[in-house]
Length: 398
Image (tube, rainbow, N blue to C red; front, side):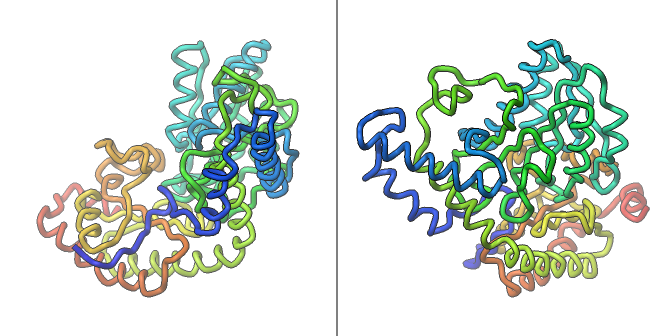
């Protein structure tokens, strides 16, 4: 095993920023009150929540009342999808859902739950070979009974950035609420909810150097939403449960730092990302880039390699101290090809030979050079152990 560690899996999670930890620490020990209590420790905790909510509202360009703190990104997404759709259904506005075919499973499974148990019909919008949802495709899919549309801001596997403002404008003109999973966007893309034309927006702190176990839902004032956790009046009766004060303070601190650092951080990531993509494509035959080359997250490089199994390469990379992935961390135990890559039109073999490298703070030019040095011989080694069949060679070079 290598003593060197090159962490290229920031799309799965990021390390906690020391400044964020420093902001959180007092709320584990000194300021431990319950924000619902009326005594001084409770009031101090409530003030911390109010301050955090104000910090986040300034970045998103919304009011504090439009923010709901949750237990993570999946809860935020489930609250948005189920809460909005069921509220619309109860109001007689329809039982039709639209999501893109490349959504995170938190969106897909929530929508499928509504389809199976609550009588909704579900339309999965196709994407092009780069993973983009075309506005005309969304326009054609809208129906008078459409209750909700959900399209992610940027894909967690291939990094493709959707034309969110244009998609949101179409929904707004049709009077249909629009949700976006923006979990991968914070710290690298603008989050102004007015400019994005969203009614609901989901975030989670651990993707931008904050703590795990805390997320956020923006819900536009007046947007329909039924609570999905009952039991208390917290979060203006939209999400019951004692608030995670240290986590919420950490989320706000992390998002504030991420926004302050965003211009320089993005410029640096783009340079390193492009060096990695260009270097691998040039040095490894029968390789390709998954996702749109221009409209992609600054730190995302998802590449396919013909005639290899991605899991085998990941094991070799791990032995060399390089941390990468073959897709979403939430499906890492699955043997099925990525639904995202299949939606691009890739065959199962090609999808299984794809790897995701996601860059972040701490990655250096030397780290990228190290990957470019060790990965090509690894691919050659795996290919030598299991040579391509003629059918797979034809697929790779088609």
